[in-house]
Image (cartoon, rainbow, N blue to C red; front, side):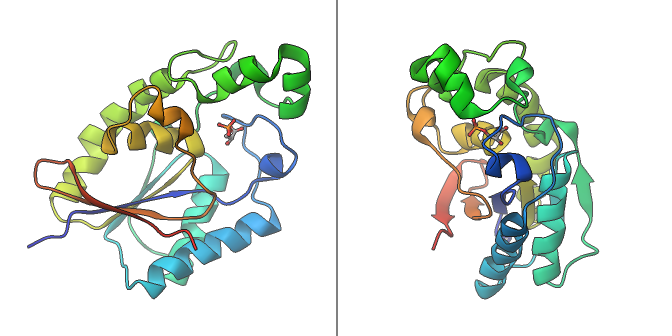
Length: 207
Ligand SMILES: O=C(O)[C@H](O)COP(=O)(O)O
């Protein structure tokens, strides 16, 4: 029986995570700590005995690099990998490149929290989580899920909000509960799916 394995991992710390800047579709590199977190993600998976048949990532280098470093730890650097813009981070629009504390000072703590974590309020010129779901979910349904259901062990390295979009569906969050679902950088979340594509089990590999 195939195991229908789906592992999600958020990229390691980026230069802009470190500087506390809204990042979105901008493309900063990993920091040394982010590189370390990516190695650690691969090590965590290796310790648990995981191997993969296919990987998916975004068009942004912090996710691609995280994937490659994790695959290196797994001894799987040549793994078939699909890169798609559908897995890019939520577009932060006009907030991209701004400091998150400066934004709180300008627009207020509550407004910034709504832009960052609400389900359907987009930041100015950017995407809400709902908008992000509208582009990630069709890709998940047409490209990722069929592989998982075929029994291909699948690794997805992407971003805080593009993964929260998938997690909202996988974990059946409401617009209220998804606001509190945070993803640590470089910590794999392991799903096993049922044949009907709902979740059988979920394990967070946080230490
Ligand atoms: O795009 C960003 O700034 C981060 O990757 C995620 O930011 P958030 O924690 O504000 O969603």
